[in-house]
Image 1 (cartoon, rainbow, N blue to C red):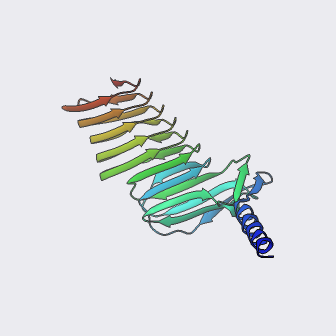
Image 2 (cartoon, helix red, strand yellow; image 1 turned 45 degrees about the vertical axis):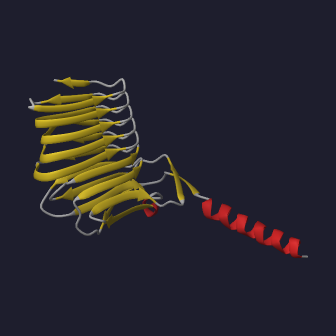
Image 3 (cartoon, rainbow, N blue to C red; image 1 turned 90 degrees about the vertical axis):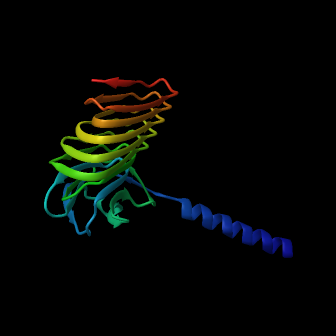
Length: 221
C-alpha cells in the first residue's frame, strides 16, 4: 500500500512538472496593430526572441509595439534594473513572428540581445560615459550616430555589431562567436578574439591590446 501511494505521488509530481513545461503554440495571424505601452524610465534595452527593435533619441520615453493582434497579449515590455525588457511570455512558443518595437529615449547606455531580432539605433546619442553591449544570438545591432567614453562589447553568437557611426575613446571587445564588429575607436582598443568573428575599426588608437586565439582578425579600415 505504501509503495502504491508513493508511486501515485511520484506520478502526480511528474505530471505537474510536464504541465508547467508546456507552452502555448501561437502562430501570428490576423490584423497588424500598433499598441502604445506605458513604462517607466530606462537607459538600456534588453531583448529576447525575434522581435525587431527600432530606437530613436528623444526627450521623452515612448514605447509602441506593432504585431499581429493575436501576438500582442504575449509580447511583454517592462523595466527591470534600468533596462527596458522586450520578450514573449515564457509560456508562448511563437511562430510567424512579425513583431516590432519602436522606442524613443533620451539616453542610451546599453543593449543586450538574445535571439534573432535586429536592433537599429538612430539619432544622436552623445556624451555617454560607459556603454555596455552584448549579442548572444543571430541578431544584428546597428548604431547610426553615437559617442561614448568607453565601450564594453561581447559577442558569443553570429550577430554583427555594425556601428562605424559609433565613436568611442576606449573599447573593450570580446568575440567568442562568428559575429563581426565595426566601430570607430580614437584612443585605446582592447580586442580578444577566440572565435571566427572579425573586428573592423576606424580611427587611429594609440594603444592596441590584442589577444587572438581564434580564426578572427583585427583589421583597420
